[in-house]
Length: 349
Ligand SMILES: Nc1ncnc2c1ncn2[C@@H]1O[C@H](COP(=O)(O)OP(=O)(O)OP(=O)(O)O)[C@@H](O)[C@H]1O
Image 1 (cartoon, rainbow, N blue to C red):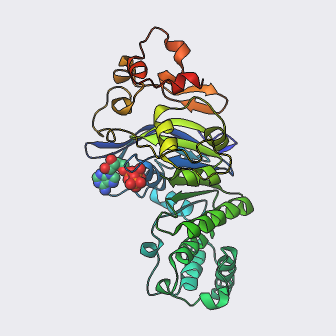
Image 2 (cartoon, rainbow, N blue to C red; image 1 turned 90 degrees about the vertical axis):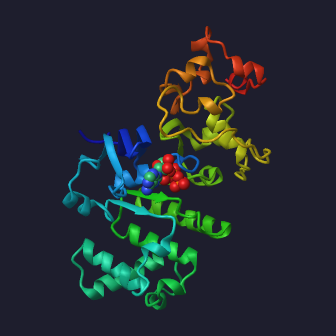
Image 3 (tube, protein in one colour; image 1 turned 45 degrees about the vertical axis):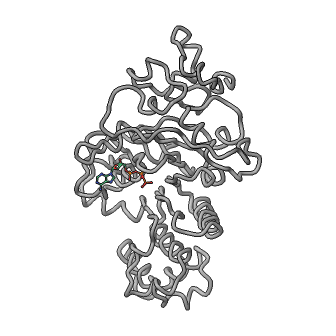
């Protein structure tokens, strides 16, 4: 097996558990070469567990129960440590939320980059220094020669994240996994860092799997969006479709969209009132029916019993919800949808 020619990564049936808690339950997802795919969902939905499973960096307490994740012809979930060492930081790279914890506090940042370079390729000290300085320049750190000798604590949060990005792209990755890369930063710095990642994506022809809970980030920087709820992908669509076109969306996605005041130019959710999805996130143990049903105003009786399967409702738009395909379920009674007077999903179709 290997990935389809257009895909850099193909995940099938990924299941990750922390003891009894199933964090990721049968996740299917592909990342296309060169695209930014945003993996979106609220805290605890399993985004980080997915990323860490792909990198094979899950904590001891976690176990990959099943699945495949093809990166070229390598199944990341089966690969041995030697194969993983050859991939990580090179063809497959990751940046994390808090760069301070990943940088060595007692080694100048330039030297840290040079050291990573020397692990990748056989470079002389001088060549590694030269290339590290170029990388600092690539991530737009001014006066890279001088900054080479700085320590992490001399840098602002945004600069530290730039250094981490320089390290992550040093091996020319085909896929960069960015897990909440800007959550710890001020909003203006966030935009700069995301712009940087996007520029590098184009210049280095890499794909980006952007993990975030922030839909305004998605609207601006993603090509496609996968919405995750309680360990499953409930919807996949292009960002254009999600933010700029009316349509039928998964009730959870609609809640997310409504709860985000999107500043994206032209977004039809712009200035929408802040909206909270009622209820708490699904218990990670309960297995039956749709995981979102207990919080869903549109849930049918059948939703509580049968897990919904993903259906292609328009080109490139997959939804796991029978309610957004009402014509196929004319005999079911959309009881709560009627009593709540919430016909959006039907009206928009
Ligand atoms: N170290 C751990 N031990 C036990 N359970 C964990 C651990 N890490 C995560 N989990 C559980 O796995 C599930 C998914 O967590 P994960 O961190 O992947 O979510 P997330 O969507 O990335 O959330 P966040 O945005 O808060 O990081 C959660 O239900 C969480 O309780």
